Amino acid sequence: MTELKKYKISVENLAIGYKSTVVAKQINFSLESGELCAMVGANGVGKSTLLRTLGNLQPNLSGTMTIDEKNLTSYTSLELAQKLSLVLTEQPASKNLTVEELIALGRQPYTNWIGTLTKKDKSQIEESLSTFLLNDLRYRKCHELSDGQLQRVLIARAMAQDTPIIVLDEPTTHLDLFHKVQILKLLQQLAHEKRKTIVFTTHEIDLAIQLCDKILILDGAENPFGEPCQLIEQKCFERLFPSEMVHFDAKTGSFKIKK
Ligand SMILES: Nc1ncnc2c1ncn2[C@@H]1O[C@H](COP(=O)(O)OP(=O)(O)OP(=O)(O)O)[C@@H](O)[C@H]1O
Image 1 (tube, protein in one colour):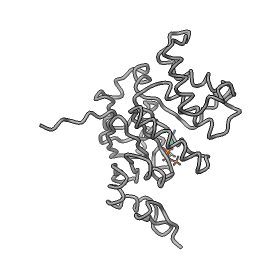
Image 2: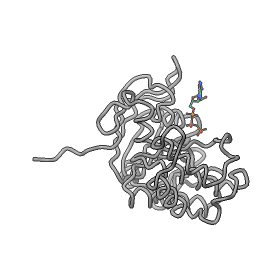
Image 3: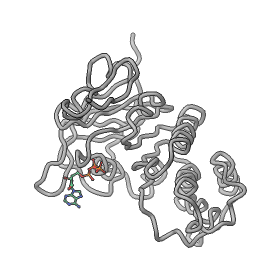
Image 4: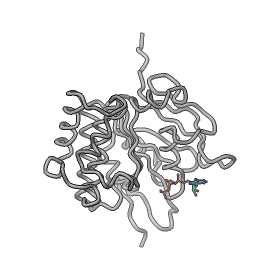
């Protein structure tokens, strides 16, 4: 008898958008614990809208989304905050806090109403600081950090929140190649070593192909999902951009400019 796979998060026939405007439809994917997944696609195709829908910040138009086989919309806010953490690009309100204070905020779903930190909260904060190489920056104000350092702090806060699922909107924007790779490798480590399910949007398709276990391609039509090598074999990346400008080189797993 074959055992049914237990998916951490599963999305079936999902349509997303705003009121009467459908931004994307027929979105299907399922992820297990320990998987790192990128969502890629052209500007405006609906990546951020999908992340906001998964974070329950906006309603879906149709279809189902489940976490641990329970409908995502039937979780209370507190229950969802213990299942899924969301890392969005712009979070200026918290920039006056120190690195340590901002990471401590990740413990909010577990602390009492005055926010007293227990031994477990403190050890989770310490672990997040050291995993994301932030020990030397712990007393620095967040507005004094570089983009790459701030991005590490925001992900460390999600790690402190200690949810099985972490969802991030473009965690590598504004970063140089070294820091893009550093962030993605830290996410990969978090997924593989701590068995987190991590989903992020990105325009770095070549890096995602090298580092991710799964990729969802939002192409405005079939939205293929699978392992990077399967998607390359099925020529799914070729359809992503107009072919007169760029073409996908399956040998190197990257896009080349048409001369
Ligand atoms: N609040 C909103 N109300 C109505 N339409 C919106 C709203 N926010 C975004 N949109 C539209 O939804 C579509 C998808 O936008 P979204 O930001 O999800 O795309 P994206 O794939 O993340 O793009 P990018 O790669 O440029 O970040 C766009 O056409 C956008 O104009």
